[in-house]
Image (cartoon, rainbow, N blue to C red; front, side):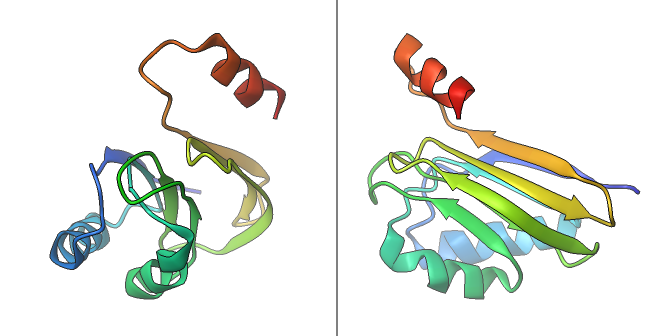
Length: 126
């Protein structure tokens, strides 16, 4: 199995043109799994963004001004999402997946820049 994973700080995807350009660039690279940080998403737009991506996507949202992470899956491999844990503060997203019959845990993390011990404690016990 040849999974290619990309991680990208997008510094906000609220602008439709920027989101379209970012999604098109990611599609052109054909990464299997795209980990996005600082999406600045809200729960109101998760379904729209997933539809614009065109395949399976997961988001952990907070506000349109800060935080937010997402995982965009490409349709170039067989995928089953088994379980997800979504941080209500938009800082991390953990999911158990089965790509091509193999069990895998993916974690996408956008940590605060204040070296918060409590944040990492919460993340590690999740």
